[in-house]
Each structure stands twice: as structure tokens, then as C-alpha cells.
Image (cartoon, rainbow, N blue to C red; front, side):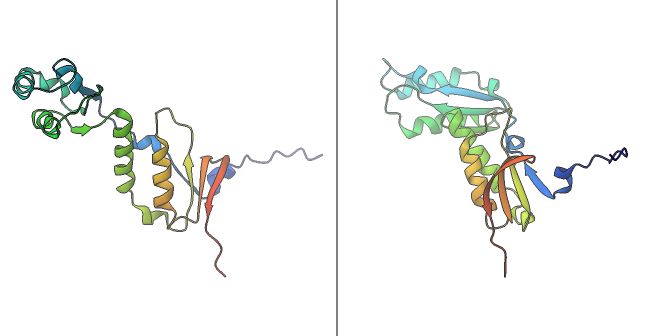
Amino acid sequence: MNTEEKPLVNRVAESGLITIKLEDFFPDEPLHSFDLKDYLFMGLILKEKEFREALQAHDWTQYQGAALLVFCSADAIIPVWAYMLVASYAEPFAKTVFQGNADEYYKMSFANAIGEMDLPSFQDQRVVIKGCSDKPVPPSAYVELTRKLRPYAQSIMYGEPCSTVPIFKRPRKL
């Protein structure tokens, strides 16, 4: 029996895998909601004069540096100008004004972040898209990143570098 101790080798570190953590692209600004249902007359219609007065009286400074999600949770027909009017009041304060709910905002935010990545830098690389996250990464982000990486990466895997699920592998050139 060999009594010499062999040095520990981190085979994952030496594998040349590039790990992408989508949670790193999670938006850092706080989210605030602006539900138009609170401004509906009898829960059904939006009266322009009263709506304008309510918006003028609203404290817009509370959205400073935040993402403001503008939507209507009631089953009502909301005119497009209502969303535009909210945006015009919120824009000087909010970092962004988005028409939709939090799930839709996260999808858009991740799509934008992935669109800004330097994808050619992954040319012929073996990429692992990290699976576990402490933040709610939408499945659409994994789909979009896979779609965008595929023309460049040698291979794409999902999970942890020590335990991955193969997603894509470029055929070897003859």
C-alpha cells in the first residue's frame, strides 16, 4: 500500500469550463407596483379628469431609483394613454417604468442583460449555465442564454460544474 499522500487536484477548476450564473444578472433596483385598479370608477372605468388629479397629488418621489411596474389587476379596459400618463409622472424619479407585472419585468430584464453579453468571447468554449440560484431566475432566461450561446460555444451544460446535464455539443470537425 502506498503511504505517500497525493495532492488534491481540483479537476473542475482545471477542466476549462466557464460557468455563467444567471442570478448575477438579477436586477438590483427595488420594485414598486402601480396598480391602476385603485383609480377606477366603480372598479370598471377610468375617468380622465379624476385620474389626472389623482396622479398630480400622488407622491412620485417614493419611486426614486426603483423599477415601477404599471399594470391593472382588475378586469377592466384601460386606455393606452393611462399607462403613458403614469410613465410621464414617474420618469423623473423611477430608474425604469415598465408596463406589466414582476414576472414580465424579470423576463425583459434578463433578456436585455443577455443581449448585452459579449457572446463571441464564448467561441469554442465549454459553458456551464449554473442551475441553482438564490434569486428567482425565470426559465425564459435559460432558454434565451442557450439560444444566444449555441452559435459560439463548443458545448453548453446545465447545473453545477461537478454535476451537469448536457444541453448542446458541437460536432467535431473532420
